[in-house]
Image 1 (cartoon, rainbow, N blue to C red):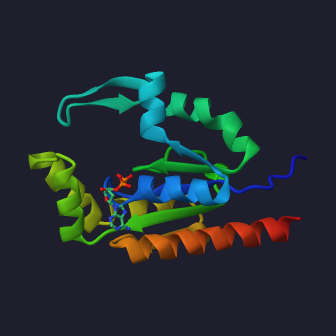
Image 2 (image 1 turned 135 degrees about the vertical axis):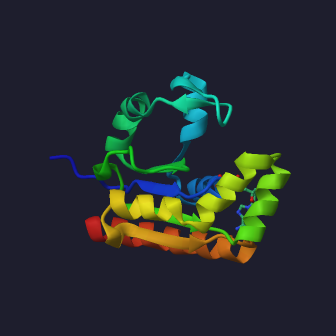
Length: 174
Ligand code: DAT
């Protein structure tokens, strides 16, 4: 049996909550590999159809999973995506759902260029804690953690907390 030394971490949450910001910095500090599923799909054209309502391509979830499987088995991967229920549960040792206050999120998405329905739907997704509930259904509750992601202090605290968790886990496994 292969021992998985480095854990895989899922960063999820509504678009704009700060997954990319946290994930990239975390990778730099820990040496883990950061993977943005949106970018991966774009690079490999892992899409299946087009969503007319949102004017965006539809992720081919099966091909994304196939594409990532080997890397995930090696361990030490930070995955960033605004959804979480199509990944195999066994991939992740811990799941973080980032949360941002409504006004704050609204402003971030607006400056990203989101308008109209897209802007409203994403803010509503956060208000209804859609992704948190998705994560709680897809993974064991005890590995799902919410993180506040409103300001630079939150970012720093989250980085320290996750780095510490990784260190502890590696010690326990060796
Ligand atoms: P996501 O990857 O979840 O879509 P992002 O990392 O691109 O989010 O962040 C969206 C914007 O918010 C970006 O301009 C950076 C900013 N941001 C992220 N985390 C933050 C934090 N903790 N405090 C303040 N701004 C933050």
